Image 1 (cartoon, rainbow over the protein chains, first blue to last red):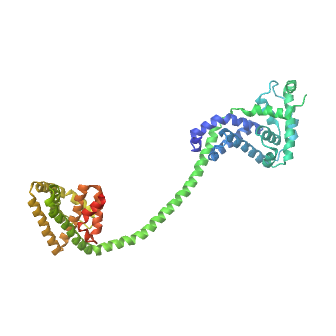
Image 2: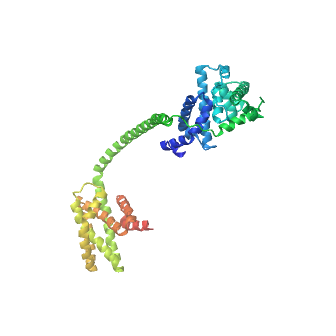
Image 3: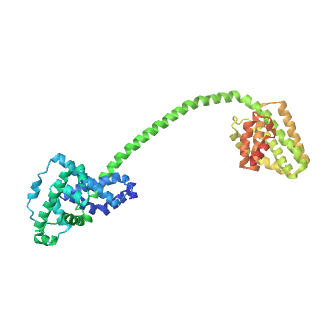
Length: 177
Length: 251
């Protein structure tokens, strides 16, 4: 880490190699696909190496890196929001869910389901469920109301459940009991 | 299809993604590295350039300022030196004569007391002779800068001094007394005839006395040299000066 602060290229590469797969998993949750995730990942690492001096040792280093990644993903989402003006949310909801392997629910499956979510739903779901943001924080960060954050979260959950049931069939129903 | 609790549902995802790892399909490091390098190289030089520019300006400004201040002073010094030369030359005459008188007195005082001191004094006396010789040689040597003169003396007279010291040591006390007498005579001459050559020689004598003190007492007394040289112009009580100052510094 000290080497990274000093700008040691080998230490930077070592840090990258030690953390990249975990960080890509973070970025994948926030992205539509792997391409977008890797773009976010790249931006995130550039930020990390530029701002590494700002890390003062509060909390774990990996936690700090993860936070930078998440912030980068959120930033990227907000930029896309402005430029694309997307959000035909129900389109994703209506999408046919063919092509999934039915079997045990692994991380890869959940990732696929999350990535299928509309961007807004995905952001709220990730931030609330995985990262632990409050609805207030999410609303402030994404520029939406707290109520909108809550409703989008419940909507995202509903879509995810439906997709998972499509994937698992009765297997998931039995799992839930 | 049973409804699942939101908490459990969330926990399912949380657990799945907590330590999730996905290896990147392509080598992203090279592109990240290429992004880091140019930015650093571009950003840092800007800071460095600005800092360097500020430093340069400051340095140049200081230099110019100092030169402007120093130049007139230097000229003034040169002028003062040239004008002051005769004055300064005359002033050391009296001082150096005084300094010379001191060893002579000491010779008289010390001779009865201890043989060691007598030898030392004999050395000084002999050296004083040598100095006068060396000083005449060095009369041509430029200017007042004491260090150069000192060095020259140190190199040249050494041989003669050693030889004469050996002779002096071998010789009896009476001869050293004679030497001191000779010195007193020379002092009288100096006092009576303030010639340039003799003046410089006397100066040299004073300097050489300091040199000898240095050789005997080493670094502590080098300070004495400077002090004596500096004080030469002003104070007469320093007749006993070099040795007294030496004692002070030893304390």
